[in-house]
Amino acid sequence: MKGLDPQARVAIVTGGAGALGAAIGQKLHLDGCHVVLADVDDGAAAARAAELTAGSDGPAVVAEHVDVGEPESVDALVSRVGAAFGRIDVVVNNAAIQRRGGIGDLDVEDWDVAHRVNLRGPMLLCRAAVAYWERQRSGSVVNIASRVWLSGGQPIYVAAKAGVVGLTRSLATELGPLGVTANAVAPSFVPTDFTRAGRDDAAWEEILEHHRGLSPLGRITEPEDIGDAVAFLASPRARAITGEVLHVCAGTQLAPR
Ligand SMILES: NC(=O)c1ccc[n+]([C@@H]2O[C@H](COP(=O)([O-])OP(=O)(O)OC[C@H]3O[C@@H](n4cnc5c(N)ncnc54)[C@H](O)[C@@H]3O)[C@@H](O)[C@H]2O)c1
Image (cartoon, rainbow, N blue to C red; front, side, top):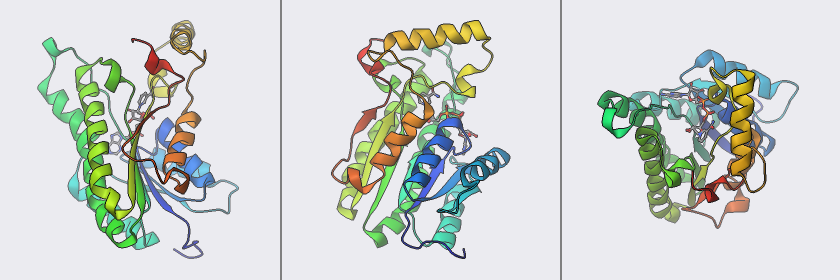
């Protein structure tokens, strides 16, 4: 790509078309990274990339297609990013899907579908990026978990997010000698189109009030709060932090549920 700053870090954000993914991409961009918003929803990712670059002559923001659960798709994404930018510094595994159902009526197919995206996805992308980190001797992984890994809840989603924490700790151990940090960010409720879906104004206000009540700070966590935490953990400022889970949820991890 012409005119790119070759010194700038290169960040891949999966689920980059979503509310959190876009906020993470924005903060990484403000921190000087070239940002790849990788998503299965090409139109939404392209629209997010256009929003982030509007009026900016800073680092690049591009949209790329990926299905994070598909090895060929992930490997192809990493090859395209490597060809365009020459390096991969930051991997943010943010793409995830929700599947509900208690253990008594759990649909096995739902389990496989969700784990393919939520747990296999982060593994595949890190696996594909290792070759870059071996060469560069530096890098950072930030996996988006959830506060539910502590509190429990919907078994499919919770098991995947607890798995993401386990994967993060394994990556920290294995990739540390390459100079690569690996950490997780655990949000709780964040108001997005996704969490709002199907709720009228009254129901929405009620849920916001409920989550404010769980927070010792009396506040709701916003997408940009997640973006700030990820940008910090992905930066050299966090060079001595690895294998951690940072709860970015206004203290709601202190509440029982
Ligand atoms: N919003 C919350 O309240 C909340 C709370 C805790 C944790 N999280 C976590 O934060 C992350 C982002 O959540 P969000 O609210 O922005 O969700 P979202 O649904 O808005 O975004 C998820 C994105 O992932 C993409 N995606 C889905 N399947 C994919 C696949 N196979 N390959 C590539 N991309 C795929 C979707 O197209 C979407 O753009 C997720 O990991 C979620 O589990 C969210």
